[in-house]
Image (tube, rainbow, N blue to C red; front, side, top):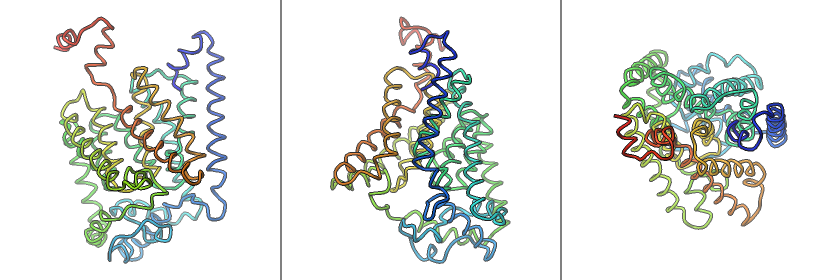
Length: 407
């Protein structure tokens, strides 16, 4: 894992050995990602850039008609199906407006560039997130961070499928490391790309130091988009209710509590669990966003709310947990680190199990995957400022002492 973990298992003086171990981990993760996913990218019937098809066709419709929305979406909700990908642009107009500038780039180069852009930004930002969380960066630490990103099935599938989940992870990373103004602007940008980052925007709106930036950025983005494509926004008002009422996808293909518990006949219990987590995390995020000291915790809670709010929780949605785990690791206690390690190991096993094991083994694997996901969500919430202060002051410091020390 991170440098701090390697320092617990290897002598500090053996820097060359640590570098060798980090290099081996990076190489193994690269081989895993390539053999299980990326080697199939340009094969016939591959899902490489599959979601990007919807974005590109939406951008082309926007140029041709002034609206990115397929007539079928304006008539009613679409079920989740590859057959509906051509009609599957279900986002506000700004994403299609941005991509309309790139429709001249032929396939497969545009989805390749889309994936490479996300990979480059993540390779730069994830080490910065680790440092912002209190970690120390080095060559071996950077290699391990990149190895974890390569071995993360949700993150890699986000890049592979060509959807915006990678950019959401990039946005959360920027909110963790950037200034309050940057956080406000990024939250507004994410919210104009798709609806699910609403908790992140709400948190930035509540936070006093980022409130103005979030309002100005959202107003500028909406006004500019409306002036460019007024018909697109009129159609969006018709399409949005249908998008919000999209039924849950088949249970075999995603990780939501409703879909997972449907496999054992408890779908409604799972749906209620998912919505309860989303609402509870959203309320907690709003509460924490009132204080600058709890801003990182607000981002984590808002990300969890964003993750569980939709009825369908595609695997790539969990890509947002990667930067949150990088951020929390340097200050995490032993229990939290063990949870993150076990959850990550299981997500790595998922490359081989979740969509390949037949019968009851698949059911058991999906339930374990949901448990790992819930455990990861709990573990990526940063410790409270009081706990950090207590750790800094030493094991003999009482809570009252911490309170007096904080003034």
